[in-house]
View (cartoon, rainbow, N blue to C red):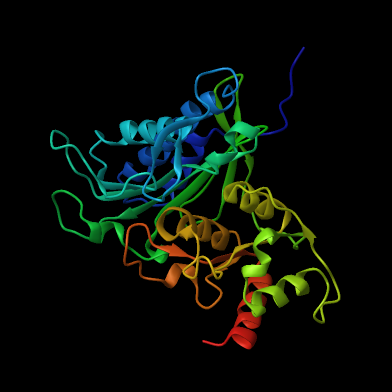
Length: 338
Protein backbone atom coordinates (compact mmCIF):
# COMPACT_ATOMS: atom_id res chain seq x y z
CA UNK A 1 0.00 0.00 0.00
CA UNK A 2 1.49 3.33 -1.04
CA UNK A 3 1.00 6.51 0.96
CA UNK A 4 0.46 9.72 -0.98
CA UNK A 5 1.70 12.96 0.56
CA UNK A 6 0.04 15.85 -1.23
CA UNK A 7 1.58 18.69 0.72
CA UNK A 8 5.30 19.44 0.43
CA UNK A 9 6.82 19.51 3.90
CA UNK A 10 9.22 22.40 4.40
CA UNK A 11 11.11 22.82 7.66
CA UNK A 12 12.27 26.24 8.76
CA UNK A 13 15.91 25.18 8.27
CA UNK A 14 15.21 24.14 4.69
CA UNK A 15 13.28 27.35 4.02
CA UNK A 16 16.05 29.56 5.41
CA UNK A 17 18.62 27.72 3.28
CA UNK A 18 16.40 28.11 0.20
CA UNK A 19 16.18 31.85 0.92
CA UNK A 20 19.98 32.00 1.17
CA UNK A 21 20.30 30.37 -2.25
CA UNK A 22 18.82 33.51 -3.80
CA UNK A 23 21.98 35.37 -2.74
CA UNK A 24 25.04 33.68 -4.31
CA UNK A 25 27.49 35.75 -2.26
CA UNK A 26 25.82 34.95 1.07
CA UNK A 27 28.19 33.57 3.71
CA UNK A 28 25.54 31.66 5.66
CA UNK A 29 25.99 33.80 8.77
CA UNK A 30 22.52 35.34 8.62
CA UNK A 31 21.06 31.89 7.93
CA UNK A 32 22.71 30.52 11.07
CA UNK A 33 21.49 33.49 13.12
CA UNK A 34 17.90 32.89 12.06
CA UNK A 35 18.14 29.20 12.86
CA UNK A 36 19.55 30.00 16.31
CA UNK A 37 16.49 32.18 16.93
CA UNK A 38 14.29 29.26 15.90
CA UNK A 39 16.15 27.10 18.42
CA UNK A 40 15.65 29.74 21.10
CA UNK A 41 11.93 29.73 20.27
CA UNK A 42 11.73 25.97 20.85
CA UNK A 43 13.45 26.26 24.22
CA UNK A 44 11.28 29.15 25.37
CA UNK A 45 8.14 27.43 24.09
CA UNK A 46 8.95 24.35 26.16
CA UNK A 47 8.68 26.56 29.25
CA UNK A 48 5.71 28.72 28.29
CA UNK A 49 3.56 25.64 27.57
CA UNK A 50 4.12 24.27 31.07
CA UNK A 51 4.20 27.54 32.97
CA UNK A 52 1.36 26.46 35.23
CA UNK A 53 3.20 23.30 36.23
CA UNK A 54 6.78 24.46 36.49
CA UNK A 55 8.40 27.05 38.69
CA UNK A 56 8.42 29.59 35.86
CA UNK A 57 5.45 31.83 36.57
CA UNK A 58 5.41 34.87 38.78
CA UNK A 59 7.82 37.74 39.30
CA UNK A 60 11.53 37.70 40.15
CA UNK A 61 11.22 40.61 42.57
CA UNK A 62 13.33 42.89 40.35
CA UNK A 63 12.38 45.77 38.05
CA UNK A 64 13.78 46.23 34.54
CA UNK A 65 14.95 49.41 32.83
CA UNK A 66 11.38 50.03 31.65
CA UNK A 67 10.17 50.20 35.24
CA UNK A 68 8.32 46.90 34.86
CA UNK A 69 8.45 43.96 37.23
CA UNK A 70 10.57 41.20 35.69
CA UNK A 71 8.78 37.87 35.32
CA UNK A 72 10.63 34.56 35.74
CA UNK A 73 9.96 33.66 32.11
CA UNK A 74 11.30 37.08 31.01
CA UNK A 75 14.56 36.23 32.69
CA UNK A 76 14.69 32.72 31.20
CA UNK A 77 13.92 33.95 27.66
CA UNK A 78 16.54 36.71 27.88
CA UNK A 79 19.21 34.32 29.14
CA UNK A 80 18.39 31.71 26.50
CA UNK A 81 18.70 34.13 23.57
CA UNK A 82 21.92 35.62 24.94
CA UNK A 83 23.60 32.27 25.59
CA UNK A 84 22.74 30.94 22.13
CA UNK A 85 24.29 33.97 20.45
CA UNK A 86 27.16 35.28 22.59
CA UNK A 87 29.84 32.82 21.40
CA UNK A 88 29.11 32.23 17.72
CA UNK A 89 31.31 34.95 16.20
CA UNK A 90 28.33 36.22 14.21
CA UNK A 91 27.43 39.23 16.36
CA UNK A 92 29.32 42.32 17.44
CA UNK A 93 26.73 43.47 19.97
CA UNK A 94 23.22 42.76 21.23
CA UNK A 95 20.44 44.83 22.75
CA UNK A 96 17.56 43.61 24.89
CA UNK A 97 14.48 45.31 26.24
CA UNK A 98 15.46 43.88 29.63
CA UNK A 99 18.93 45.49 29.76
CA UNK A 100 19.70 49.15 30.42
CA UNK A 101 22.77 49.23 28.16
CA UNK A 102 23.94 47.45 25.02
CA UNK A 103 25.14 43.88 25.58
CA UNK A 104 28.76 43.37 24.61
CA UNK A 105 30.09 40.10 23.29
CA UNK A 106 32.35 38.50 25.93
CA UNK A 107 36.04 39.26 25.30
CA UNK A 108 36.94 35.58 24.86
CA UNK A 109 34.74 35.30 21.75
CA UNK A 110 35.13 36.75 18.27
CA UNK A 111 32.96 39.65 17.12
CA UNK A 112 31.00 39.35 13.89
CA UNK A 113 29.29 41.67 11.44
CA UNK A 114 25.71 41.60 12.73
CA UNK A 115 23.67 43.21 15.51
CA UNK A 116 20.82 41.40 17.29
CA UNK A 117 18.05 43.32 19.06
CA UNK A 118 15.30 41.48 20.93
CA UNK A 119 12.36 41.67 23.26
CA UNK A 120 12.67 38.30 24.97
CA UNK A 121 9.06 38.01 26.08
CA UNK A 122 6.56 40.60 24.89
CA UNK A 123 3.33 40.63 26.91
CA UNK A 124 4.87 38.71 29.80
CA UNK A 125 2.42 40.30 32.24
CA UNK A 126 -0.20 38.00 30.69
CA UNK A 127 1.67 34.76 31.42
CA UNK A 128 -0.19 34.06 34.66
CA UNK A 129 -3.51 34.31 32.78
CA UNK A 130 -2.62 31.85 29.99
CA UNK A 131 -2.75 34.60 27.35
CA UNK A 132 -0.47 34.49 24.29
CA UNK A 133 2.96 36.08 24.66
CA UNK A 134 5.90 36.22 22.28
CA UNK A 135 9.49 37.00 21.33
CA UNK A 136 10.45 39.77 18.88
CA UNK A 137 13.83 40.21 17.20
CA UNK A 138 15.62 42.13 14.46
CA UNK A 139 19.03 41.73 12.83
CA UNK A 140 21.11 44.57 11.36
CA UNK A 141 24.57 44.91 9.84
CA UNK A 142 27.08 46.68 12.02
CA UNK A 143 28.14 50.23 11.16
CA UNK A 144 31.56 50.17 12.85
CA UNK A 145 34.45 48.58 10.98
CA UNK A 146 35.64 46.01 13.52
CA UNK A 147 36.10 45.18 17.18
CA UNK A 148 33.37 45.30 19.84
CA UNK A 149 30.04 46.72 18.74
CA UNK A 150 28.96 50.19 19.77
CA UNK A 151 25.76 52.07 20.51
CA UNK A 152 26.00 53.50 16.98
CA UNK A 153 25.70 49.94 15.62
CA UNK A 154 22.45 49.53 17.54
CA UNK A 155 20.85 52.91 16.84
CA UNK A 156 19.85 52.34 13.23
CA UNK A 157 16.70 53.12 11.27
CA UNK A 158 14.20 50.33 10.81
CA UNK A 159 14.82 50.62 7.07
CA UNK A 160 18.31 49.20 7.77
CA UNK A 161 16.94 45.91 9.15
CA UNK A 162 18.12 42.88 7.17
CA UNK A 163 15.88 40.37 8.94
CA UNK A 164 13.19 40.46 11.61
CA UNK A 165 10.81 38.03 13.15
CA UNK A 166 8.57 37.14 16.03
CA UNK A 167 7.44 34.02 17.81
CA UNK A 168 3.95 33.69 19.31
CA UNK A 169 3.53 31.21 22.17
CA UNK A 170 -0.19 30.45 22.17
CA UNK A 171 -2.45 27.49 21.41
CA UNK A 172 0.40 26.61 19.04
CA UNK A 173 3.85 28.14 18.71
CA UNK A 174 4.39 30.09 15.49
CA UNK A 175 7.50 31.77 14.16
CA UNK A 176 7.07 34.47 11.51
CA UNK A 177 10.08 36.04 9.82
CA UNK A 178 11.20 38.11 6.86
CA UNK A 179 14.57 38.80 5.24
CA UNK A 180 13.09 41.52 3.06
CA UNK A 181 11.67 39.05 0.56
CA UNK A 182 8.14 38.57 1.86
CA UNK A 183 6.85 37.15 5.13
CA UNK A 184 6.61 33.46 6.01
CA UNK A 185 5.04 31.70 8.99
CA UNK A 186 6.01 28.39 10.58
CA UNK A 187 4.15 26.32 13.15
CA UNK A 188 6.02 24.19 15.68
CA UNK A 189 5.08 20.52 15.47
CA UNK A 190 5.61 19.35 19.07
CA UNK A 191 5.64 15.73 17.95
CA UNK A 192 8.87 16.12 16.00
CA UNK A 193 10.16 19.33 17.59
CA UNK A 194 10.43 21.18 14.29
CA UNK A 195 8.98 24.35 12.77
CA UNK A 196 7.11 23.54 9.55
CA UNK A 197 6.06 26.05 6.90
CA UNK A 198 2.35 26.66 7.44
CA UNK A 199 1.79 30.22 6.16
CA UNK A 200 3.93 30.97 3.07
CA UNK A 201 4.05 34.43 1.52
CA UNK A 202 1.77 36.14 4.01
CA UNK A 203 -0.06 39.23 2.77
CA UNK A 204 -2.46 41.37 4.76
CA UNK A 205 -6.03 40.55 3.69
CA UNK A 206 -8.93 43.01 3.59
CA UNK A 207 -9.22 44.46 7.11
CA UNK A 208 -11.64 43.02 9.66
CA UNK A 209 -10.33 44.24 13.01
CA UNK A 210 -9.00 47.21 14.92
CA UNK A 211 -6.98 46.71 18.09
CA UNK A 212 -6.49 49.37 20.74
CA UNK A 213 -6.82 49.74 24.49
CA UNK A 214 -9.94 51.89 24.60
CA UNK A 215 -9.67 52.00 28.37
CA UNK A 216 -7.21 54.84 27.72
CA UNK A 217 -9.47 56.66 25.23
CA UNK A 218 -10.12 59.61 27.55
CA UNK A 219 -6.37 60.39 27.38
CA UNK A 220 -6.24 60.37 23.57
CA UNK A 221 -6.20 63.45 21.33
CA UNK A 222 -9.26 64.54 19.38
CA UNK A 223 -7.81 63.19 16.15
CA UNK A 224 -7.29 59.71 17.57
CA UNK A 225 -10.73 59.65 19.20
CA UNK A 226 -12.35 60.67 15.90
CA UNK A 227 -10.25 58.04 14.08
CA UNK A 228 -11.52 55.40 16.50
CA UNK A 229 -15.09 56.42 15.79
CA UNK A 230 -14.35 56.25 12.06
CA UNK A 231 -13.13 52.67 12.48
CA UNK A 232 -16.46 51.87 14.15
CA UNK A 233 -18.42 53.15 11.14
CA UNK A 234 -18.89 56.76 12.24
CA UNK A 235 -17.28 60.02 11.09
CA UNK A 236 -18.43 59.44 7.51
CA UNK A 237 -17.24 55.83 7.24
CA UNK A 238 -19.77 53.49 5.60
CA UNK A 239 -18.25 50.31 6.99
CA UNK A 240 -17.10 49.28 10.44
CA UNK A 241 -14.42 47.03 11.86
CA UNK A 242 -14.70 44.75 14.87
CA UNK A 243 -12.75 45.59 18.00
CA UNK A 244 -10.32 42.84 19.04
CA UNK A 245 -7.80 43.57 21.78
CA UNK A 246 -5.74 40.92 23.58
CA UNK A 247 -3.30 43.15 25.45
CA UNK A 248 -0.17 41.39 24.16
CA UNK A 249 1.00 43.56 21.27
CA UNK A 250 2.61 40.65 19.46
CA UNK A 251 -0.61 38.61 19.58
CA UNK A 252 -2.76 41.54 18.44
CA UNK A 253 -0.52 42.29 15.46
CA UNK A 254 -0.23 38.60 14.59
CA UNK A 255 -4.01 38.26 14.45
CA UNK A 256 -4.26 41.34 12.26
CA UNK A 257 -1.54 40.02 9.93
CA UNK A 258 -3.64 36.90 9.35
CA UNK A 259 -7.09 38.55 9.45
CA UNK A 260 -6.44 42.12 8.33
CA UNK A 261 -6.74 45.25 10.43
CA UNK A 262 -4.87 47.89 12.38
CA UNK A 263 -3.19 47.92 15.79
CA UNK A 264 -2.50 51.25 17.45
CA UNK A 265 -0.98 52.41 20.71
CA UNK A 266 -0.97 56.20 20.42
CA UNK A 267 0.67 58.88 22.47
CA UNK A 268 -1.61 60.23 25.19
CA UNK A 269 -1.62 62.75 28.01
CA UNK A 270 0.20 60.32 30.31
CA UNK A 271 2.72 59.10 27.71
CA UNK A 272 3.24 62.02 25.30
CA UNK A 273 6.16 60.27 23.58
CA UNK A 274 4.30 56.98 23.21
CA UNK A 275 4.67 53.75 25.17
CA UNK A 276 6.13 51.11 22.84
CA UNK A 277 9.88 50.62 22.39
CA UNK A 278 11.17 51.81 19.04
CA UNK A 279 14.05 49.34 18.67
CA UNK A 280 12.63 46.27 20.33
CA UNK A 281 8.94 46.38 19.36
CA UNK A 282 7.98 49.03 16.80
CA UNK A 283 10.79 48.64 14.26
CA UNK A 284 10.78 44.84 13.84
CA UNK A 285 6.99 44.50 13.81
CA UNK A 286 6.72 47.40 11.35
CA UNK A 287 9.33 45.80 9.08
CA UNK A 288 7.35 42.55 8.99
CA UNK A 289 3.99 44.21 8.38
CA UNK A 290 5.40 46.35 5.58
CA UNK A 291 6.89 43.24 3.98
CA UNK A 292 3.35 41.81 4.04
CA UNK A 293 1.98 44.82 2.16
CA UNK A 294 1.06 47.01 5.14
CA UNK A 295 2.38 50.22 6.64
CA UNK A 296 3.55 51.50 10.03
CA UNK A 297 3.59 55.06 11.34
CA UNK A 298 3.85 57.15 14.48
CA UNK A 299 0.70 58.85 13.23
CA UNK A 300 2.85 61.56 11.68
CA UNK A 301 5.75 59.80 9.94
CA UNK A 302 6.82 56.30 8.86
CA UNK A 303 8.33 54.25 11.68
CA UNK A 304 11.04 52.76 9.47
CA UNK A 305 12.34 56.24 8.48
CA UNK A 306 13.03 57.40 12.03
CA UNK A 307 16.63 57.65 13.26
CA UNK A 308 16.63 56.41 16.89
CA UNK A 309 18.59 58.48 19.38
CA UNK A 310 18.35 56.29 22.50
CA UNK A 311 18.42 52.56 23.22
CA UNK A 312 15.07 52.54 25.01
CA UNK A 313 13.37 55.26 22.96
CA UNK A 314 9.56 55.13 23.00
CA UNK A 315 7.16 55.80 20.17
CA UNK A 316 3.47 55.90 19.27
CA UNK A 317 2.59 53.14 16.80
CA UNK A 318 -0.08 52.60 14.15
CA UNK A 319 0.53 49.42 12.14
CA UNK A 320 -1.56 47.31 9.76
CA UNK A 321 -3.34 47.67 6.44
CA UNK A 322 -1.96 50.71 4.65
CA UNK A 323 -5.27 52.45 4.06
CA UNK A 324 -6.15 52.25 7.76
CA UNK A 325 -2.81 53.63 8.95
CA UNK A 326 -2.89 56.42 6.38
CA UNK A 327 -6.40 57.32 7.58
CA UNK A 328 -5.00 57.66 11.12
CA UNK A 329 -2.34 60.05 9.81
CA UNK A 330 -5.10 62.02 8.07
CA UNK A 331 -7.20 62.40 11.25
CA UNK A 332 -4.16 63.37 13.35
CA UNK A 333 -3.03 65.98 10.81
CA UNK A 334 -6.55 67.40 10.52
CA UNK A 335 -7.50 67.64 14.19
CA UNK A 336 -4.28 67.61 16.22
CA UNK A 337 -2.05 69.95 14.22
CA UNK A 338 1.70 69.93 14.66
